[in-house]
Amino acid sequence: MKVVNTIEEVRKEISSQSCSLGLVPTMGYLHEGHLNLVRRARNENEKVVVSIFVNPTQFGTGEDLGSYPSDIESDLKLLENEGTDLVFNPSSDVMYPDGFDTWTEVGGLSRRLEGEFRPGHFRGVATVVLKLINIAQPDRAYFGQKDAQQLMVIKKLVLDLNLNVEIVAVPIAREVDGLARSSRNIYLTSDERGIATTLFKSLNLAKDLYENGVRDAEKIKQEISRLIESQGVSAIDYVSIADTETLEELDFIDRTALVSLAVTIGKARLIDNVILHDELAGLT
Amino acid sequence: MKVVNTIEEVRKEISSQSCSLGLVPTMGYLHEGHLNLVRRARNENEKVVVSIFVNPTQFGTGEDLGSYPSDIESDLKLLENEGTDLVFNPSSDVMYPDGFDTWTEVGGLSRRLEGEFRPGHFRGVATVVLKLINIAQPDRAYFGQKDAQQLMVIKKLVLDLNLNVEIVAVPIAREVDGLARSSRNIYLTSDERGIATTLFKSLNLAKDLYENGVRDAEKIKQEISRLIESQGVSAIDYVSIADTETLEELDFIDRTALVSLAVTIGKARLIDNVILHDELAGLT
Image 1: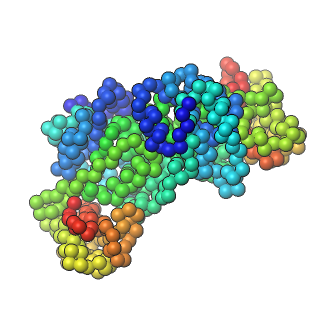
Image 2 (image 1 turned 180 degrees about the horizontal axis):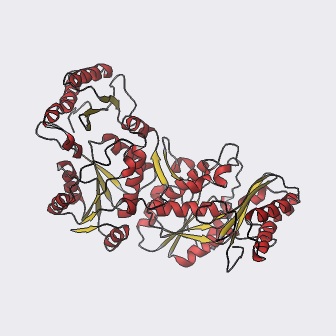
Image 3 (image 1 turned 135 degrees about the horizontal axis):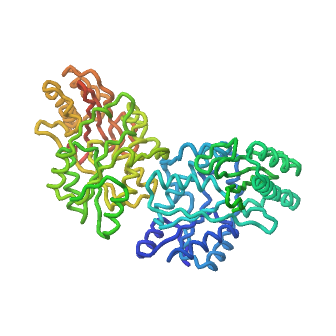
């Protein structure tokens, strides 16, 4: 496994190869969810590149850019174990040199849900993902379903800008008690960690209601909010049941729907989601 | 020479080749300036792709999108003569399908000069050029120096987004009397065609003043405006003497400078420019 910090080194490493390449963009502090992406990439490509870059442009003012957890030594050990070929770990100056001023934005999708509560977030995501794809020129790039909206934004970016890369969605990795794996779970105290399972429980509740024939989105959202609030969690950014293509809120669930939510518990802003569809209303 | 209309056909044509590729993006109605781009691409690459696409997203309200001249039959004959390998002539629906909503914008540079008078113009240019580069995946892409600011915006786009393509600038092609070749010259009546030479004359005046030691940018701009106005042309959008990196206006010409201007004569909005520098203050 080679670890490089500059774009030129990545270019040099990939240009000498004419084999299939999988890219796994991460912000480091890797957990099982990231490793699932790497394993999937490992299975589907001859070479695997993992980027570790805490992208400042996707954090808003007052967000956790300054405290975002990091453990590069552990990350590299984990990636080595998974058979990663190349790790790209650039500094901010490498990705955003002085005078950088070119931005890519996916309209519509980017303004809903996370975009409403984190203005500019998806502009930063779209721009850095576009850059990473241009740098590594992968055949496939891997993203987790936990960030469902991010995945949709990136798929739209690839479609609209005619990028020659396949975006692969990988199911959410969960702890034994159902909490979605996230680097931000480290912010939770022991008590908060217990309360945080309410996200998974509330999504399961949504699934149960749906499987029992409930199609009134407002009713399901109310039940979710009630369950979360019963745990003493009051900081709910949103509970959404939306069209999986447009992210427009649904009144009546007459098609495949994304149930997604964002809540803050202690210092951790957590998101989770499940897709409801007729044949298999399963947690992804 | 093959002519195709879809992205899939371009992909198919280029994927079967592992040779160097030059891309010449055009809006058609080709003149000597375009053909110079094709010739340069022909010299420097094994394969040459020319795109012909009147990009709607770079035209503003009230601009000449509806009347932009077109002669695809003549264009194809000219391109065939120059040894073009592939012509990509997509419809608007191919480039901007229903629901398209992803935009790329180069800040700073895009808001000056043309950007001030044509809001949104460079967002459309950056987006379509990024798409064309992603579609054709060329080693080199060719642009004319006549659109000096466009060239700067595209170079910045490539730098900031880490596109793996070399941008090649090709000198302005001029008529015998100095008028810069442009598809929009067709809008000029015979009388206006005579008056239009004032652009080239005024740039030569700037060059002469500079070579004679004048470094006061305001003085040179005044002389240019006076000359243009003496021809009865009053619709001057701008006369600019600016830094060639930032496009910031210069008071005192203490570095390489871009003299550029935009005037409307009859129905034609014409632009032209010259670069002033110490060793060789030549018209490009």
